[in-house]
Length: 188
Image 1 (cartoon, rainbow, N blue to C red):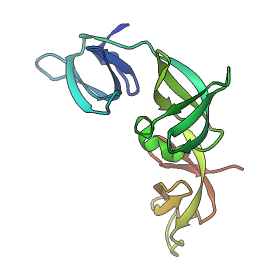
Image 2: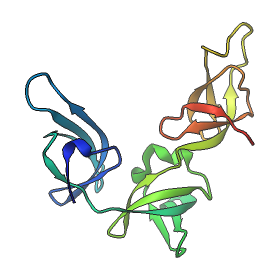
Image 3: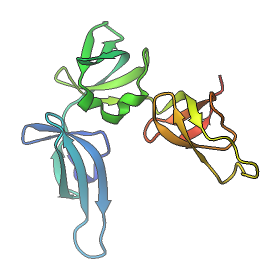
């Protein structure tokens, strides 16, 4: 399917010269003079090589046909990350280089969306938010106000983030999977 370059978004899969690429970032530039362009940062799925490409915003690029299917994360071992299709209970394995930094947020029985191209899993979409426990943080210093200051914390998955001063060790919080940022205290 051909689309114009300015419509590309993070996570789109492109087919360039028979190779599949996942879009990491797409930014459009509209200079005062000259032709508007779109710069696309992407990673080749087959070997993980990152590349940049600049297109005129109206230039056509080939988007690969990808179907998204809900899967449940089962476990991780030496072979990779194992997922199960919730409709037919088929299991598949994804390598750690495809999952990347998102692996820290995976936990057993988590529902995720896997992008499939011709039966091969090529990318993963996690839920936007997850609940994690704070395992380590500094004690609150008297006089800190909750409105402006954040303190460092380590979460149960090993990710470092910044939390408000009222959060203590053992508190369960909601974080964004995109960047690990604090959202709110968990309601459970």
